[in-house]
Amino acid sequence: MNFFDDLIVRTDPAAPNPPPSAAEGAPQSGAGEEQRDADPACALHRGRGLSGSGVPLSRLTSWGTLPRRGGRVGGGTPHLAAATLLPLLLAGCLVGPDYSRPTVETPPAFKEGGARPMPPRNWRPVRPLDEAERGDWWRVFRDPTLDRLIRLIDVDNQNLRAQVAAYRQARALVQEARAQLFPTALGAPAISRASTGGVERTTLTLQGSATWELDLFGRIRRLIESDVAAAQASAADLASVRLALQTQLATAYYQLRYQESLQNLLERTAQAYQRSLTIAQNQYNAGVAARSDVITAQTQLQTTQANAIAVGLQRANLEHAIATLIGRPPSEVSLARGNLPVRPPNVPVSLPSDLLERRPDIALAERTVQSQSAQIGVAVAAFFPTVTLSANGGIAGDPARNFFAAANSFWSVAASGSQVLFDGGARTAALQAVEAAYDAAVANYRQTVLTAFQQVENGLAGQRILARQQAAQELAVQSSRRAVEIALNEYRAGTQNYTTVVTAQALELNNEVTALQVRLNRFTNAVSLIGAIGGGWDTSSLPSGEALKAFRPLPIDRGQAPRVDE
Image (cartoon, rainbow, N blue to C red; front, side, top):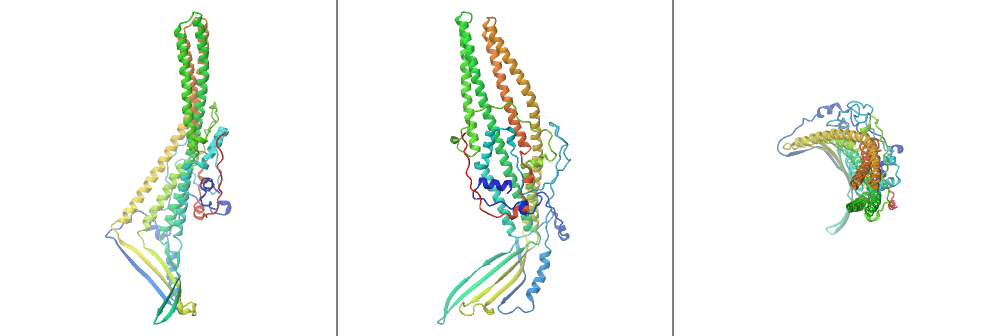
């Protein structure tokens, strides 16, 4: 069971069973390696210059109908038909362009992180597997509460459930397209009773028919190729949404811890201001300080207490946001208070050369390119004839009077073809539309790559610069604490006015809050950087084309979600 099918099991009790894994014998295929050695006869049709014009008109030409009721077929006609159709079956080819991944510009190294050089202009080919270990990237923060919360996303997040359903739909479309490669068979039993001239007669008919569209020019195979790539794109989109939800929750979690640390800081500061108020009151009672010193100290204390209370609203809102992300009503989620850790883990600066293959949004964009490329083949196939084989046969007679006699049997076989001769340019317009969609997909793919580079560079710059800022800010906090201590001692000695004390205390609080904000920025930047390099995802976790074609619905587990409150 691969990651996507495991996620289906955990999020949707009505989902089909996963496709067979590589360990179960499912053949492997590369998601981005769909090039084929085409029949030379089809090479002429791999360009994009086909056109059609004229009024809508379709002509159906029968290539032969061979009916027979009862008795033996004479002249070896079925054998002649088979000999005639066999070359047609073997001559099938694929029209339209074979897929080749678009080239992109890649820098030799990341400017902000000193990463190792990457291969110029191309990447290592992607080879999807059915089984891939997924990395729980959030565990590097070593926070059990965060670990438990993020795991709950896979259980009850409704956005993720919707994306899982979209992936299941994409897999089903692959099966629907693949079914077109096979004949369609129908059974039509009937029974009737009639009276003619006083003679009653019962007629039983057991009849079956089959039709089969030959995929001579690859329309169906191109459609399957497009749907397989679209299903892989949906799988990548599912992984991208999951990663985005995880990073959103981690960011909200550390913002909540920041609000708790800020509230703790303000409460400690209020206690310090209470002591300062006592000092000012004593100085006033001793006649060495003005009444204004007492009022100033009271105002400072009350303002800080009010700010500490206001922080509680931000914390509550963040807790509610976390509840929504894990799919629970806010009333059911209550997190124990904590503090923002001092430093986040360091995300490795030396990144591997296949870094960008770990981003699901890039895989989504690249798989979309192949899906659109295959659609060009579908549009080109519309310029060529369609050939359909059909067969009909059965037995009709009185079931009480030698029903299975040869005279009661009947059958017919036929081969027919159709070719649009005139459509007013509709097929040309359809081809131009899918070509434009392909060009748009290529541009989107390249832009996604550029955006990925930007996000990684931003994260690496933030990791380096914020670490330096935190070190400098911690020194500023130490200096401001010393300044408050000196100002209070001088105020007690009567050599300094209270304004100096208030100024020093305000500067200390400002530095403390800034230091907390820098710590938060470092944690959120670490989360963003991990998200920018794809978390623990890798393109090898995409389902293979063969696995998508072979999946079978089987029973799945109906698990219960764990509790959230501590």
